Length: 224
Length: 264
Image 1 (cartoon, helix red, strand yellow):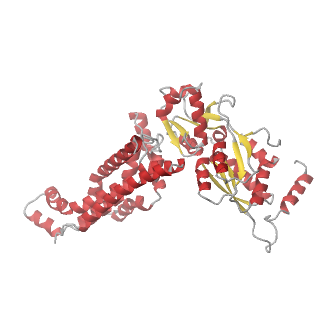
Image 2 (cartoon, each protein chain N blue to C red):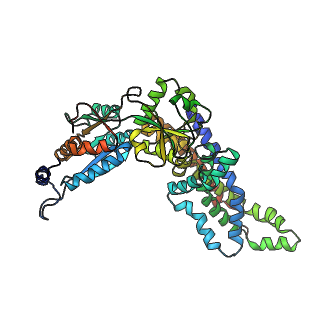
Image 3 (spheres, each protein chain N blue to C red):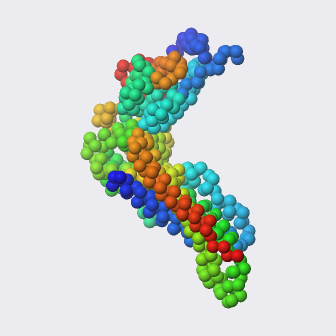
């Protein structure tokens, strides 16, 4: 494995981890709201959150590109006022990965929250616990395994992101080139042997992440 | 060509070719050719394919992409009858692997490189050396190891000794039209594309044209592929590309016609 290949592996794992952590707080909040409450517009939000899962990744990428590009509503502001670019930088990779893996996190976390028996929360309330305390000392610990499974699953999804990433961040060697982009690039170059090496690495990481996720989710604590 | 009589003769001649489109329903289905062409040929080839069908030629199914990507598809036995590459190297590779039909290869076209900036850009570029300046932060370029437009651009930037200064600013793209699109979107400050690509976009302007004499030798070869099951129809299409009708369209889009190709 060459130094460049190690860089690609390290970079991919790092940005996928940051992307997943970035969506964790808003993702959990949304999952909890979806699991526990009925509110107007809920079906719409449910649908919107699921969209990146089923839309062509490049279509999602194009929306992000338009939004975050130097002439986009958000990207234009960042570029002109803060001299800060997202498109064609590592930040673009993180944004693309975060958006693409968000649905998996929200969906699995929602199931995890729904698996927590509301009676336990009710008991905590009758014992005088505040809503915040109920969430952090009853709901969250009981849902933790499922949530962690979801985190691993969305991390695995982020690792493999291709379509949105190549549009938003490009495939810049040493700057935005992730495992999947590098594999594609090597195949284009006709260097299949190198591509297979990176392929083996990505299969291994994805396998471990999904396996861990499955294990966590099937061995969930039953709060009956 | 202007005389109606000649046009009529041509129409009749092409119309009577096997597989011509207008014959009655009991004749075999019209031939369809798979033509793989470099991304920079997109607009010219679409027009030529439409014209060819109008004069009764085979149906042309076009596949555009980086010449490197197309060559790769051909190596993997993708169904292709004709290949137009933006550099000789890709055709050489195919020829070495016996994928080019002997005696059908020609060097048809040439092009020049230009530096483009977004149409509303205030950037002034007097020489390609200005790309090294601080006001240029990101430069779109085709992937410089495989994609012809990127290879040509790299050759030129190395020749004038600015490659090392700009290499950190490069945003490599998959094909030349993707580089063009990056400049159009304003997400990069400048890009290097073929002159013919700049010509089809209203959202970019040419900041600098690299004269053919200073730039690398750019050559677009065409050939019928040995894997083609419709070699006869493919030869005819290649002949049409070289005919005044084909050459005229290439010229219209700004391609240079290689010496040795039949004059219009």
